Amino acid sequence: MILRKELKIKVAPLHDQLENQYPFNFSKGIVNEEQIRDLLICFKVMFLPYLKSKEKEHEFYKRSYHILANLEDDRDIKEYNSNIGQSTLHLDYLFLGSRQGNRVLLNRYPELLNYEGGEFFKLPFPTNLWDKFLLDLQKMTKAEEQDQFIASCCNGFKKLIYLGSIVEN
Image (cartoon, rainbow, N blue to C red; front, side):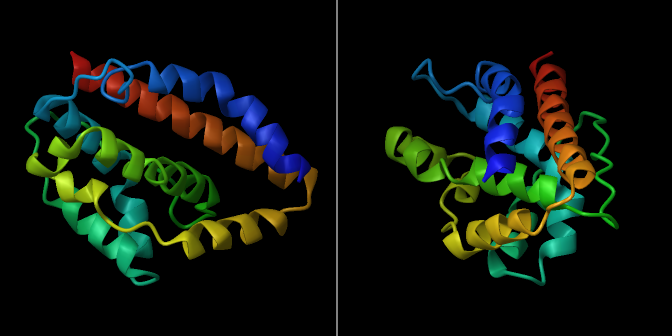
């Protein structure tokens, strides 16, 4: 699929930047409760309205929503305006894509389960949701639609990068 290849090329530098930034950087081999809390707060800000809009579609979304919604934070970070009334395909890509690595993280850092919100990493990932996302992506045939999707994905990565810089300070 040409769209998936173009998407991968366009988001690669942003994906790399995100994975090298606190609290998303796990490559140093050291993970602590504050980092996990900050990561989950970033996810809460970024994905909570999206998850709320999808919680009736699948138990996975509902459980993800409730775990993130129950995290408290005294920082005044505004929720991401994701235009929930419009297509959320870019948020599917960002959220579902991020969740695919959870088993690897848990194998490497089993202590994640001991941290507040740690059960978020243990939620079973339903592969049928990723399959549905891929089918929806295949239906996107107009160049303008594809360009908008890629731009929205890039903006989503930029927002997560921005959120990471806020929680780090």
